[in-house]
Each structure stands twice: as C-alpha cells, then as structure tokens.
Length: 429
Ligand SMILES: Cc1ncc(COP(=O)(O)O)c(C=O)c1O
Image 1: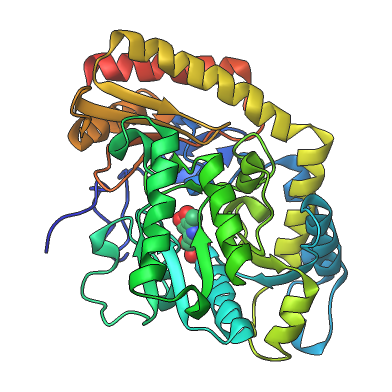
Image 2: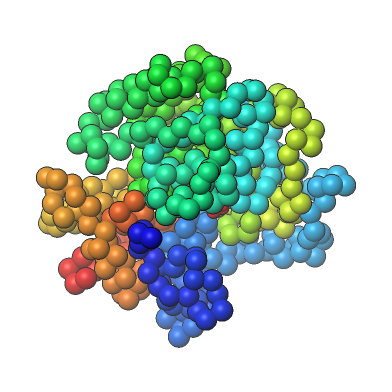
C-alpha cells in the first residue's frame, strides 16, 4: 500500500499503530499555550490537538466550568429529558449563528455530525445524491469517509463506500489555477453544472457539502464568489447546502464561521473540534423545520450533548465573547501572515502563504514556477520546529503545507516567538 502519511512517528508498545502521529514525544500536561513533555520541556503549541484546544490548555474558565458540572451531573440524560447546560449551550450557539439556523442536535465528534447531516439531507429531501469536493476531509465513519477525498489512504480498501456520492473539483486557487480566483470559481461551478447536465440531475441531489476553508486538504479557502455560486445553485434546485465548520469554525478564521467570509447562510452547519476546548462534543445546526421533517427518533445518540462537555462549551463561548477573541484571531492572524510573507521574500521554497485569520497555511514548493509540492521539506521543518520548541503540523495531499493553528487568544509576542523559530527551522532543517 502506498505510504500516504507524513505522520511518521512510531506508536508506544500497546497503543495502535494505526493512528498517525507527528511526533514521538510523550506529553505530560498543558498550561496556557504550552505543552510540556515528560522531560519537563515546554513547547509553544500551535497544533492544539488539531484545532481543538482553541483557548489553549488548562484554561481557567473552562476548567472551572468542568469542575462545577462534574459535581452536579456527568451522565447524559437525553433519553429522559434535558439538562440545563445542554439547553443553554444550544441557545448560545443559535445566538452566534445567522437566522434561520435555530435548532441544535448535539453529538460527539465531527464525523458523527457529518454522518447525521447527510442522513438528514437524504431523509428530508427524499433524494439520494450527495455532492462533495475534491480534497475535502469530513471524517472516518463510512458516510464521512465516502465524502472525503483529501488522501487516498483514507478510502483505500474500504469500498464499496456510500453510493450516490459525487466528488467534484474544488477551486484550489494556488495549485491548480495559478492564483486566479475568478477562473477557479468559474471553472469549478461549471464542473458542478456539467455533472448535473451529464450524470446526476440536480433534482436527484439532496445536498452539497463543503468546508468553506478546507482543512486536511491543505488549508485552502474556497473563494467567496464560489461559495455564493454554490448557494445560488442550491437555491435554484432545492438542494441543502451543508457547511462543514468542524475545523474552520469558532472564530478560527477571524470570523465566527468560515461561511461568513462569503456572506452566505448554509442550510446546515456541522460543528465540533474547538466547541468544548477538548471535551468530545459536536453539533448539527439547521432551521427547526428541517429537523421536524427529519422526524422523531430518525436519528439518536447515547453520549451526544454530554452535560460536562456542554458546560465546557458554554465557558468557551463566554470567553470568546468576553475577550473579543474573534477579533484577536483576525489581528494575530494578520501578524502571522505578514511575518510568513516576509520569510517568503527570502526563501524561494515557500510558494504560498494563505489565511484567513488564524487558519494559516504555508505551502512549501520545490520550485515556485511549477508549484511542485515539497512534502519532504515540510516534514523536516515541522520536526525541526518541534526540536526548537514549536509545535506545528502539516496538511495537504502531499503533506506540503505547514499549518498554523495558534490558539484564539494567542499574543503578539507568541506569534513573534513562533515566527523566529520557524525562520530558524527553515534555515537549518
Ligand atoms: C473539516 C472536518 N470535518 C470533520 C472532521 C472529523 O472530525 P472527528 O475527527 O471529530 O470525527 C474533521 C477532523 O479533522 C475535519 O477537519
């Protein structure tokens, strides 16, 4: 089988070798924006469990909320009613989302949210077709795997996957369209229309599913005009537009939600990762009428909406609001992007630096003209960064993009520190 992972570290004796690991270190604890290994060494953590600990580690408000809830009620009570933190977090999420998104279905993981959203789309529309985008990553369960195409290793050997899924081109502006957003938008919308002209009638499509900014696929933002075109296409044909905000949501892009950059409102939004700063929790949000049509007991969960996770989620949102962290993500993201562009001016191996906000990707290339990806250098650089005390990860099908997932409350001094380490790693890796 082709090796398709850059996560080369080996697993400890009795832990699965299947999980990809970037580093072999064993972690002892986290404090603020630092992770500490068992030798007591501190690392500036710009990986955050892959965009999970948006507020860093051992955040006082989140930890206090968890402690308080543990003393009141731990077990989920979905089958027998509801619980105060669960209701309250749903209300707070709806306050953050545009109308008419007003109804929340809590689950445990991003994959589960995608899985549930796909089931809802098919059941509510009575249509089989699901359209997703090349390079998208939506999770590891069967439905989520079926709509994932960010790496062949995630699909290989699992066929037949879910029938009715069609993967169409994503506007990869940098690599495939020479930086021309308008052409990328035009051609990818045309490819979608061509699908409906030749292969799958639009009237058979239940949903179009997209990450407004692709995560695992390479930190690739969809052009705003493309997302607006998708919205129009879905409206024209009565198709549900699902936004996978699992990685790009919760302020990461300098807006609360990735889709906001395009000024659109999806029909369904899937949330997870940083929703509870590390406790397992995810959500499907849509207008109420859709979930009413989905139907009572058409879907369910044992653990989804755990009260402790929801208490953590409330503390996360309160902190984001009280500390203006969405604006901080925009400001610190601009600082990081400017610093990386300055490095790009002197290092021809950096082909692209792209945001938005604190969802920053640095594409390493063998040659700026061909834009040929340099995953090997990216791997060397992230290992060197770790040796120098900074944790960053890679993404993209060729593992050529160094991704920066700083905490939302990162400081200017920490961004400068990370940039200095990265500059040294580029020189010496
Ligand atoms: C955009 C996106 N969707 C879905 C998922 C799946 O989430 P989980 O690993 O919690 O199942 C991920 C995980 O990386 C993701 O980045």
